[in-house]
Length: 386
Image (cartoon, rainbow, N blue to C red; front, top):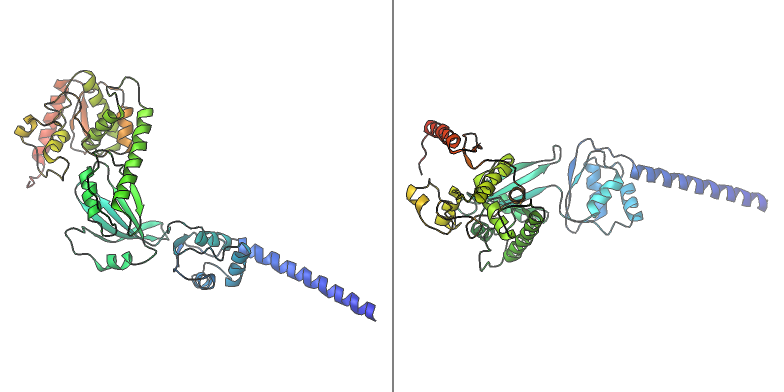
């Protein structure tokens, strides 16, 4: 009898172990299997929450089929204490395992609301935008100039949220004074900027910031980034260029940056300046005249006068020979690379062609024809008040 009871007990234990193993394997398969989402969603993880609340939210949004399996899987992977606050993009078909990785990995939020402070050549603007998970594209919620316009309520709201991301986007061709003034206008940053950095020393790029970040530290980050870009361009330069130092390469790149906004033209424009320098011709480029007038402190806002083209300043390349003494703006990577590796052409002239680009020429006669065409286009354009 006891032998029979013991046999039955052993059989029951083996069956229970077998069933338990099956349940574990089934749960593991569910945890790793493709999820039910047909469209991407943005999952918000509030500060101070826990996996219980997050799992319920994921079930409610249709991202997972079982909250308990998600929690058990996260616990088994020792990730329940690694939950990160923020807004995270969950892709269609993401498994529970992948979702756990997303909300515990750390780093900046990957969706939700973003505030972008844009420092451009003509203005500084603030853009509030949200990522649409369905399209993975940002949708603008507000755009304004913080220095002259009323601040929209949505900006005040999102700025106070802990999962909002902040970026400073510096356009190519802005001056160091414009960057400094732009940073001073941003209420999300702190700290004083005692001096404007050297012209050309800041890398145009997009920089992640957090509320309370120091303005001077951000400028130092931009300077370090530009040093890397200049060094790389100098290292990869063509032989025989009429520039002898990285500083001269930076000056040339800044002129290229201000002369064209067409990416495909940069190396052609660079070839014109290189050819003129090699032939002992003056560069005769308007942006250098403008810089001699404004010193980079804002935009001129009108056309150049003949007296200004003839006026002597250290930067006026209609008057001086060779390169000006300093850069006239902060050039980006592409203009630095164009200065270091220009196209191989015989061009020594160029003029606007009316399409946003330029017409290039090798002789003065050809250039004069191009100028005449441009004058016709100018005459057909509506007159603008200066």
